[in-house]
Length: 529
Image (cartoon, rainbow, N blue to C red; front, top):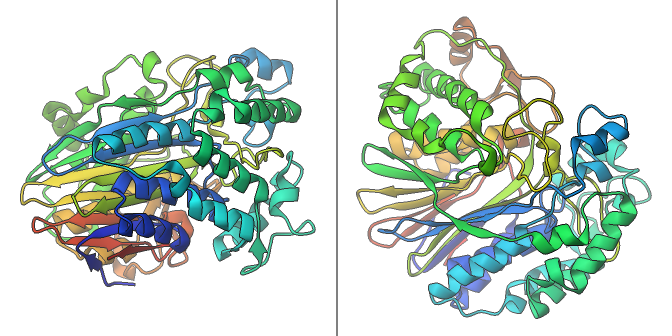
């Protein structure tokens, strides 16, 4: 897939074609980009259940050319009962990745839908939430075909998920992963989405749904209680930004790793690389990633507990200093502590130029694995990223926000272009963003070519333990050899491997033409009209 999709009246992209279609239908009906994104997010929670759920968190950037985008942070906090002592009494020295004690934070993505729709109303949004969840409800109640990625990930993770409360009854077929193309129905989730559409998002936190959620979480053994749900809310925040020659980039502030995404591109832009796809391009971005991740892992976590202002690391002097540490010929020894994660990124731009970059996640594939029987909700395990010992902004404490790999991105160009882009992929998110953005914006590649081109990943994701520099096997052998000679611990992985993320992007040009791209590593697409 190398051809960029183009249209004039609206464009949507997501990692599943049924979700993209749900968003496009909203745009066709005159809905705006925020409304289309809610429709896609709801659909993905049904048809891509291994990647996302309404039992997780979400982060929005919403803007239009000539304006600073608005951020909507929908990040759940650690439960009041979630303390290091809770895990100590259970004989644990780390938070488990699955099961009830992994489900230790509230889920704020539905609150984020509500706040984003308030922003939507300020831009003329008019469609009711009941319409926006319509496609998702239909797929949940009538069934959707299981994708290859759902089958593969269910098979891969079945042994660690089969015994978790509610999982087998929802996502296994007689104890096995459902076959590709088989029809899966999620009626309880459909009823929940229908109720949210009718009663509103607040019911998830302070209404009947909240009581059902709290009862099921308690029965499963999660520390999240009704009072924790009642305190959960989304809020508007200012994005982080950095200027590169001819453009300004925007991303999300802590508790996300948006800082590192901006730092990688800003550091790389200082290295003087003049062409794409060669040693200097790949080596330069990998080494910029290392410098950004060292800062990220030291300072980013619960924003109220951080001791440094992330914006300080986007100042010219700081970026110049970090760029000066990069050896253009030799790799910095690695690894640093890695982060895994599974997520969906989706974007939309409407006929009036309103643009959305949104990311929604339950952290690992199927999150904690807990499926709540009354509501059909899969609950996230984002709180597994908390630490139980030491100090700093990632130490577990009631009310704290966990470190998030999620980071939606936007860019405004001086020539009038406006871009939304992003990906899933945990540790790989900033790296995939850097790959696609540098190829498109710095070196002039076609948007779809920039996403389809071979990618790399420094560190681990998708539950893998190795922290090598992973390269898709489509890179030229001479380049691979040069990277190895420079000291990179290279591991070759299959082409179009999902570990490299499910990326997407939409650009609005100065004349209003929309250009979109999806990722052939996903089950999705970009589509416009």
